[in-house]
Image (cartoon, rainbow over all chains, first blue to last red; front, side):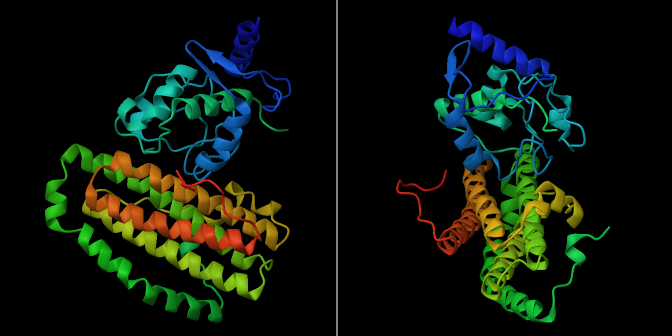
Length: 138
Length: 196
């Protein structure tokens, strides 16, 4: 039953649902294939580890992250991507985000992001948090 | 639109800025260590381009930090003491940018250019800053993030000389975090290591 609920959460992220964004504090743990993530822990990690370069709604040093789960790589409007990322024909599934956060330049040589999260648990928690951030603020 | 690099600070700020630049000559010497012909030769062609791209992201980070301190300095929200420190921090970020840009150039790359101050103001939501505490909170968030970001650059860069440059810059960001934490009356985290 829990897995079904989580599958619905991921589907919502992929589709960019039009209803209000789920509150990450209330969201269930994200189970995708072989990993589980805690969006509450992920929110704290995102704040301390990711917000130097990223925010949910603004393109900064890196692209805006709201709705990133399920998005095609290199397609956030208005962001100046590296040629390598523009050429990458991948979708940011949780599994691909896990690979990316393990070592961006190993996954896609030539990209400008070098930062990685070494601990799998940290990556999974951040991905779980991002999966809850699906809809633009009004 | 005005580019951030063209902005002029009031005369008093200019004096402070000049003093800070003078103090940062050690950083320039450190760069000389990094940017030798031997270093350039020792870097493989492919990895040089990769390293230049990664360092350009760091330059973008510094550009945003420089703009954030400029926006804060011009906001009228800062008390004189905090303003003085903010200008010092900004001057150090400018030195970081110069050191990184020199390294990118030596690697055969082109240093990334800053956006306009208006663009940065939008990106950091400067309109939401209502008082000094808001500014300090934003500065702490950006500096802490920068310290973590530089730590995250050490592994993918993988060149000892460039890693040293990155570590030096990251240490400056960590020092900024320490000051800002104290200025906000907060305690440092109980758990070590505090970054990364």
